[in-house]
Length: 139
Image (cartoon, rainbow, N blue to C red; front, side, top):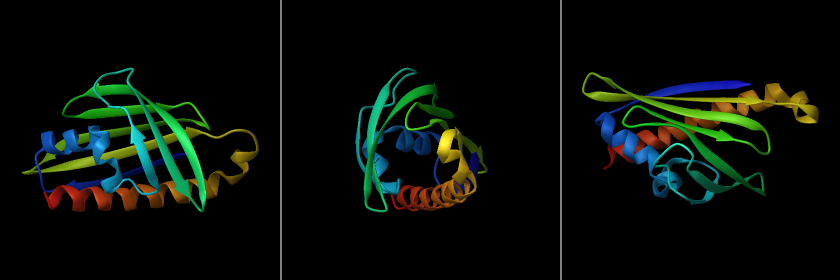
């Protein structure tokens, strides 16, 4: 499964990247996120996050796999499914184009629901990027 989305945000690349990389800001724009602990400052850093969706809570651990300010930030998620999430910030005129990609290898019984997971991931990325845009443009 792979989901991609992007948004144009009226702010400098450095501002967008710093906001995305600072996990203290995550609750302002990441839907379903209840809590986040840790910091993304270098490859290998770990961040623990708790999400709730449809009345169920789930904790995940993100490992920073890519950290190239102010352009790239990537995470690997090992459980419950092996997944990657990457952010790319690039100048677009005087604004910043933020692109996000989520890819996951679904296996076992969950693979039967890959189509549904794809639709949910696409919807989630769009929602979260709209929230990110609002949060950054209100600063």
